[in-house]
Image: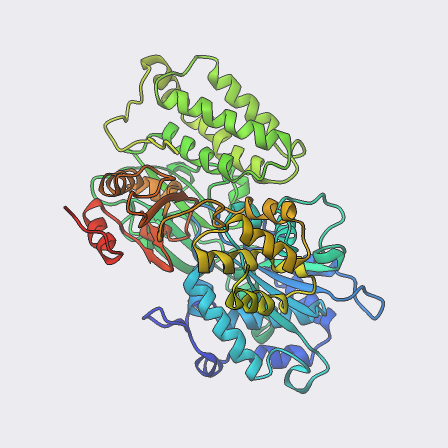
Length: 432
Length: 158
């Protein structure tokens, strides 16, 4: 099985420096890309069926194709790497930046060339200190070797490359909020259209791509579309970095063919549940996706298959809930996260999420009322797409909507017995 | 007044952006690194250097959970209370920290050494419960491991 993104990573967890990276074939794709037409690279990536690994799953080449090209295009154009990984349960981009920062830089150079960007930024969350040190070092190395800067490798193409470290807040990972953050404003979302590809950073054409997405690009350019599609067990191209957290035997990350089943990831790689714990359900791709249960173990983890099963693959990093965890408490925890991280820009999200949290807290603490479930369902309906400015609140409603269906009896038991049936287990006493 | 070091730091950051205000998060972090938190006069001076009003800069400063506009202890403990860490035992770890330091979340210990702040997902979900102190990430926490970690930062058990 080929693992292009991770196979050269060192077992001790340290980063490959530039000469080690070059020895693994690194930066050869840049040399090849610079001999190609930008549109040709866009077309290649589009045909490879690389879909955005930040969770939305949009075809990457297609995303690029909306950028104005040619001499009349507004300048400067920007490529931004979204390394603000903060989706709960997601820790894949950390590994990619920490262990192979040059792979990301190479992916960004090629992607920037494909849209003829003049300036590139890595937007990194502040808490990723090791990643920050390593990518900063790698950027310096790449400048020294003329992979970055003026007239890259003697070509006509030049690229300025910067690292921006942020200061917290989940909201900054939302594409348009990220642009505001990078401009030095509060990270609130922008209305779309105009889309960033035509009016992004400082009103100029901008593409924002996820770390894992960009890390795929050199391999596609180097090895071709057919090879890339052949890595996958589904329509989506390539491999995927899957992850599992929770009470499993071996929590971690694995690069596997796109479309690997939930069962294979959970059983073979994560080793199944720890002794003494039973599987209850999982959230397949970060906090803002709907629950899957044991009956979904044969679902392939790719964008379309998980969608068909009633959830979303999201970031592809699963959170496993075991039988000692109170489902109401878990939803309380999830919604508390979203309520706290709401940027407050639009009313449904700013006002609605705290209501959801208050109701869930009341139920969890034994003060629930019978009509609380209806109120929660109402929020699930109205904090939904098109009622809110961005996808934060709808994302928050995904686990809530599915949790209300899946754990109906648990909710009712809390309300009827006026207590949490799991109260002897360390529960959701989150007085913050 | 900004110190020479702060001024130089901010000027270096300005080179990364085409517009001055884009460096404002870095400027706030520079002040915070040297002073522990961002006082009003630091905010005032940084706003001047960035060509922003104080209100604009404060709007940005208060947006971010890692920019402190109030005093914090010498070591800020960022403990993840999001879903994976919560499942793996955030509560007992947090309660142990609170007992040891005699503070609740959001508070600073009496000796000014530690501030305890629960934060969203730290991206260390395969090693939950996790927390950060300064640049260090600590994973697979149990109440039993906490004391040894705190001792590295000068905490002494009675």
